[in-house]
Image 1: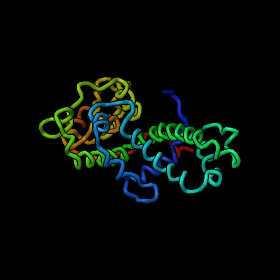
Image 2: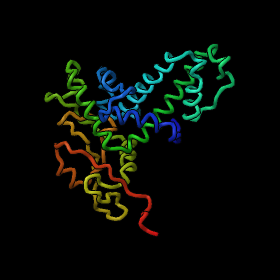
Image 3: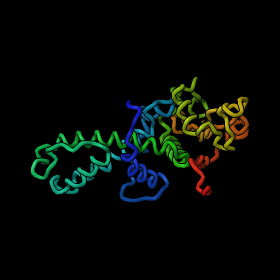
Image 4: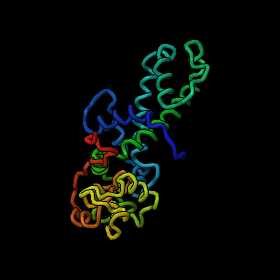
Length: 254
């Protein structure tokens, strides 16, 4: 996967998903049916960190459901402005055949283009939402509820005798780096610098935002950076994370 992405492509999708996950029900709410599909593939992602996360899968399904309605809303030739606008928003070049006179004959190509654009929007929206720890907290609460509601998959393959997901045997370096850079080397509870650049003895831990003992998962969306002291203090308790960010500049300075 490319190291670069078009951030513009993700804003619209990220905004609709945030509203849906936070319970602001509307036309684009697909949260409940998607989270009702707890299966082995879902739990495989929940049990062990993967680069393609549950949030990626959710965003892709969410946007696919949303775009599917546009195919049925109007004849393709009458809805061409929407498709052209969506492709442009995701940074894609418009083909010559994307015109009122040609679009009906190229409906299969249009679907392929839209599916590729959905994937680009998914990657972009993930980058935005992965930085929103309050959203990640609410998102993981929905995941916990979905797993609790479908107990038939709670077997020894993923869960311990207490019914909680097993702790991973190791944390991949790519996940540690991603969380460290997202949280800017600061504890997300007390905001102490744990980078080692200023205070070399400060230690950091990768903490489950929702603890495994409280139904949390091992998906990358459920990790944050904590200092050793805050992690030990938190223990097995559920604690809603802060969304405070380090400002890039101080506007109070004239």
